[in-house]
Image (cartoon, rainbow, N blue to C red):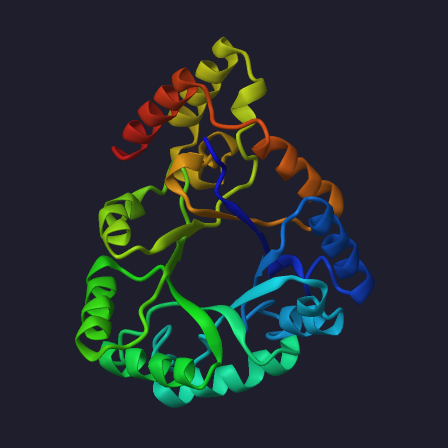
Length: 286
């Protein structure tokens, strides 16, 4: 089985990786691992929005052969507005695309994501704005992040009816305790949309666990800590076969190396998958 494409998350750039030298060290390691895609956002880090893009631009990541994906800024103009409101209007999208390329030192974003849904702006306006920016060469591809099924269907319908550029990537959290997005897989496949996921801490650690220890751990997590399941190592595993791309987050070079080492182990044994599926079924009852 071939592994999905691997991307590096720029979330730690600007937080734990705060200097050009620290960022370059990670980029050098990514080159050795043959990982040439970075996923960032205009919002990152939250304490200093745009710093992640700025540092990537400072080290000239694109000039080193990296493809950089980023996300439209989801910051509201009004602090009293609902979360995400009016962040995907034509002017808001245009403004974000005037700022991000400048910070990244590029004229075109590789994959541009709509960071989060904007329920207060008509899908038609969002799609038209993306078409306008695409026609001006601002991005190569675009994607949707955490859009609900009804909004995803509406977006595709508008794009098809109007002849607009369509999203080709869908990004979402996905792990054992958060598998709701599985219902979108048939729709995504039907439209040729790749699924990229970003939930990879403690990736595939079950490989090295004895059978009895795995079962005991699963039972303990089910009985003792169901409310914290999303943060537990045992339920933060990702079935590789469901994803077209995985996004690795690491705050240091050694952490990144460990993630890659874990991924190289390949898929979990069938017995482990069955055990994890059973845990998921139990978690749904809580």
